[in-house]
Length: 265
Image 1: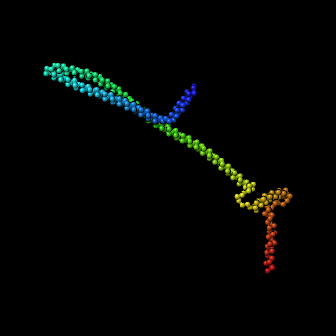
Image 2: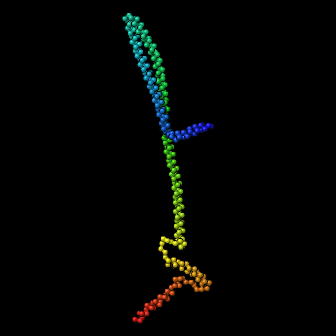
Image 3: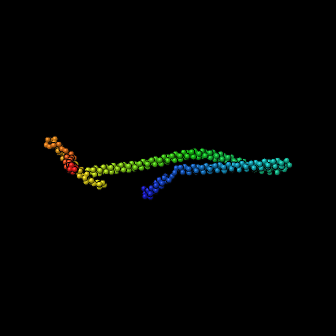
């Protein structure tokens, strides 16, 4: 296949595809129906023309018959007064008119037959046009419904695709939210354990010191408890209980010192 033939085929295929996209079957059907109406109108106009010609021939026949009747009367009248020559001339003319009338009657019969044929063709064409109009409207309605259904399906397809994208966005948002929640929980645990310093709140040195002391005391108490179980020492006491007797001993002298001046009075 030559290059020009290939180019021609490609051009025709693309042009045909473009025409298919541009063509609306409803418009094509309406145009075809309009053309059929025009053809039907031409046939009806032809019927009217033939009928007019037939009527004109009929009028000519009537006129010639009237003239022939008049010539016959004139010939008879001429014979009644002894003018045979005039009577012969009148009858001769009448016979000429009869020849014309015979020719016109043949033409009239032909026109009448042609008129009947065209009338029958017009009636058949009218029936076909009416049938095509009904079929045309049915096809147009079906096409319109199919077009609407296609648009609805395309809309649903677009919504489904859009909802799929929205679902992915929601999934990503949920994943990020869960990741942020896990990270926030990990930071809270690190702050609570002291692995990270909390720069957002006030630092309590005393509480920190107490926490450190409490941590060391727990170990010492556990060791003392184990020794007592093994019979190697007394039962352990908590740091607060161990500190209470010392505090009482310090408070007792202070109380005595406060009461000594009263006793001297």
